[in-house]
Image (cartoon, rainbow, N blue to C red; front, side, top):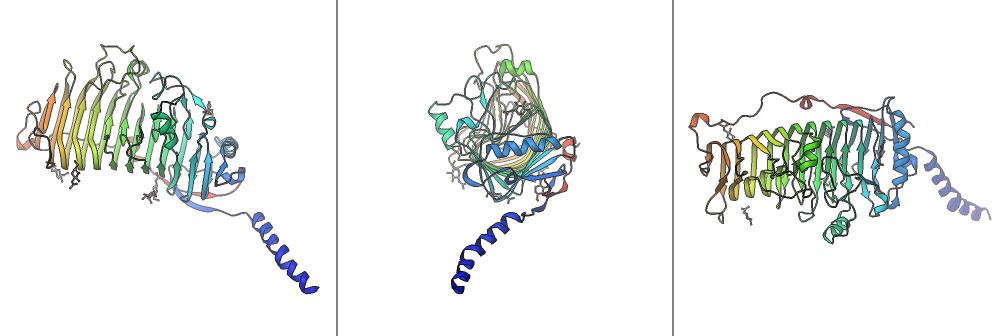
Amino acid sequence: MDVLLLLVFMMVVLPSLHVVESVRTPVLENFEYCAVNCRAYSASVTDFGGVGDGTTLNTQAFRKAIEHLSQYSSNGGSQLYVPPGRWLTGSLNLTSHFTLFIHKDAVILGSQDENEWPVIDPLPSYGRGRDTQGGRFSSLIFGTHLTDVIITGDNGTLDGQGDLWWKKFHNKQLQYTRPYLIEIMYSDNVQISNLTLVNSPSWNIHPVYCSNVIVQGITILAPVTSPNTDGINPDSCTNTRIEDCYIVSGDDCVAVKSGWDEYGISYGMPTKHLVIRRLTCISPTSAVIALGSEMSGGIEDVRAEDILAINSESGVRIKTAVGRGGYVRDIYVRRMTMKTMKWVFWMTGDYGSHADNNYDPNAIPVIENINYRDMVAENVTMAARLEGISGAPFTGICISNVTIELAKKAKKVPWTCTDVSGISSGVTPEPCELLPGQAEEKFGACSFPEDNLAIEDVKVQTCTYRRNL
Ligand SMILES: *[C@@H]1O[C@H](CO)[C@@H](O)[C@H](O)[C@H]1NC(C)=O
Ligand SMILES: *[C@@H]1O[C@H](CO)[C@@H](O)[C@H](O)[C@H]1NC(C)=O
Ligand SMILES: *[C@@H]1O[C@H](CO)[C@@H](O)[C@H](O)[C@H]1NC(C)=O
Ligand SMILES: *[C@@H]1O[C@H](CO)[C@@H](O)[C@H](O)[C@H]1NC(C)=O
Ligand SMILES: *[C@@H]1O[C@H](CO)[C@@H](O)[C@H](O)[C@H]1NC(C)=O
């Protein structure tokens, strides 16, 4: 009898005591990480009923958490921790003075249910959605009119489960434009860092109408055949720093934008003061860095350096069209290494692709002061294809100290140029005659700014996460 009781006690009571114990004892999570701003209040998504089992929908848990934490916006700010697990959720709307921290063994999984994605208005500078007329699905991580927002981790993951969206796109089953993984609108002081983004439904990171944006330490992975999975698209933003990113995707690795045709012209908000450095890109059907094609608000003062491109269609590409208006000027690129490229340089003045038929045929984009220097490329099909606009040539093109080794199956004519003007120096193979070679003393002729942009001087601090709510 006693033995039986003891057995029952050991089998039933002891394990249940252990369970009760582990529920009651709070798992105190303390850790440090780097960010431009630290926060006073901390919480975990599990405090709001989140379950990271990959199947429980956490949209409400996340929304409750962010709503609760938003009360600290003007009182030291707050941070929301996403612990190890697979956290299925719909679109989340962030708040100000807020950090979302994603643990390296955590995956935020985008829901496949369209009802979990609120529909928002098209961007005023685009006039319509990119996939369809009208509305757009709000992004997985979304924020608008924010001050000081940080999305970071120690390489935690956002997984857009894009497959279903890509199928809907190909089968023309989309009612609205596909969501992005991260979109932050009308915000100042934005940090997106130390994350891995996989299988986005469409673009990956889209800061639009923002200032003071840092994107750092981001890995972006999407099948090279997936539609419009651009890496990072700074759009009508001022003061942006993109660095230490590794991107493999089905579209441009970085695409600099500023609105589309008549909508972008009337909105009139350029992308300017942009630094891109230490980027590795694999983009077999697109560009490493694209400027446009939506550039109607203007693009100016872009500084890109230390770029590695592998198996990509083009290195730097300017895309524009009559009707875009706007400008692309003061572009500086140096120290690119390229392996297996179709074109090293590509400029397209007749990209077409209009928002609608109401574009102004007199809105001619101005492309000027484009500087490319200190580059090496190997296994290249064609060195450059530079096509400006008839009657409105692209001017002030400068290419210096660039060595391009052509592939065995290269095109016979390595350079084709129309409606462009500028100079070259120390470039092989010899450029087209619209870019006449200069004497050796002009070897480093193409300029690169020597000053620092304000965003380059922003420093990170060491922050602590300590659960205290
Ligand atoms: C990303 O993580 C690295 C390594 O921990 C750190 O040095 C860096 O400052 C982080 N980036 C940002 C923007 O906080
Ligand atoms: C996000 O929140 C802001 C206010 O904080 C609101 O104006 C906006 O409509 C919300 N957007 C979505 C998609 O929920
Ligand atoms: C982050 O994770 C990705 C995907 O697993 C990996 O490729 C990358 O090297 C990791 N980055 C860092 C800094 O650990
Ligand atoms: C030319 O470019 C190469 C490769 O980037 C670089 O190592 C070298 O210093 C450059 N030469 C000059 C004169 O700037
Ligand atoms: C050169 O490029 C071709 C495609 O244009 C590719 O098939 C081949 O593997 C590349 N060779 C090297 C050595 O990378």
